[in-house]
Length: 241
Image (cartoon, rainbow, N blue to C red; front, top):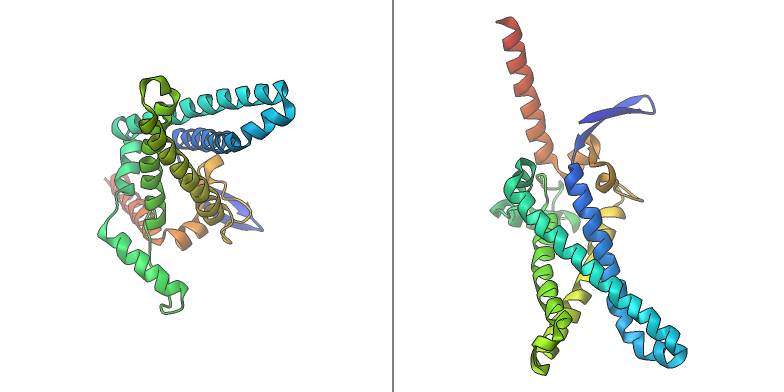
C-alpha cells in the first residue's frame, strides 16, 4: 500500500499483484504471444519456401524452434502457478478469491442490466470480478488442451494419423480462441478501459489506485477499509494498556 500526490491531492494505492504474480503474468503473456505469432505462421510456410527457397526454409526452422521454446515457457509458468497457489500464502489467497461464487452470477446479471440502463448503480464487486474469474479458469482449461495436443504434435512419431489429425484440429481451434480472447477480451477490456486508458499498469507495478478500486472492486475496498479500521482500533487499545 502506498500513496503519491497528484495535482496537490494525496492518492492512495493498494497492492493488486505481488512480484511473483507479475512475473508469472509477463512470462505467460510473452510466451503466449510468441506461440500465437509463430503458430499462425505455419499457414505461410509453403508459400515462403516456394518463393524464398533455402532462406524460407531457414526462417521456418527458426519459427519451429521459437514456438517450442515459448511452449516450454507456458508449461513452466502454468506448473509453477499450480505450486504457487498450493504452497504460498499469497497464492492460496489468490485462488480462494478466484473461486466462483453465487454472487458472481448475480453480479453478471446486475452489471448487464446496469450497462443497458435498467439499473442505476453498478454492483459492488470483490477483488476479482466475474469476468476475471471466467478468464482465469478459461486460460487453465485452454492451456490443458493446447499443451496436451501440442505435446502430441511434438512427438508425432508416437501417434497414428487419426490421432494427429484430431490433435491438430483441437490445437488450432483452441489457439484461435486464445488469440481472440487475448486480443479482444483481455487487452481491450483491461487496457482500453476508459478508467485506465491507455494502460493498466498493475501488471508492472502491482498497484491499484483507491479511486479505481472503489469503481471496479467496491466490495474489496470496503473490506480493506474495515480491516484497516480494526487494526487501528486494536493498536489504539494496545497503546492505552
